[in-house]
Length: 92
Image (cartoon, rainbow, N blue to C red; front, side):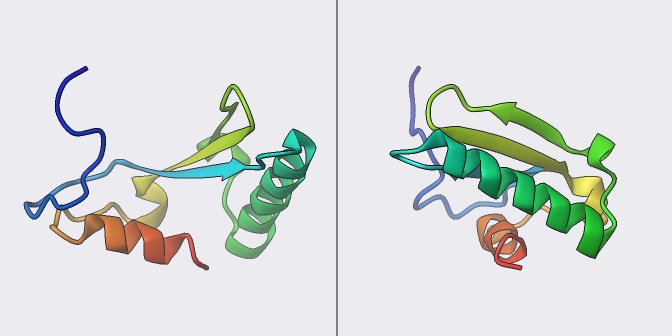
C-alpha cells in the first residue's frame, strides 16, 4: 500500500456512498456487540431504518462495523467538508 492511510489534511472535494460506523471495545467484545445491537435498534425504532439496508459485520478483532448507504440520507454531496458532515450525522 502506498500513499496516505487517511484524508487528514486533504483539502479537495471528497464523496462517500456509505456512512461507516465502527464500534469497538478494547477489553470486551461483548460490550461492542451490545452497543451495536442498541444502535441498530435505535436506527430501526427511532429513524425507521430497514435493517436490510444495513451492512453489519464483525471487524475481526474487537468490534463491529455498521454501514449505512448514503441513500438513507438522500445521498451525500461531494465536498471538502464531507468528513465533518458524516461525523455530524453519527452524533445523533
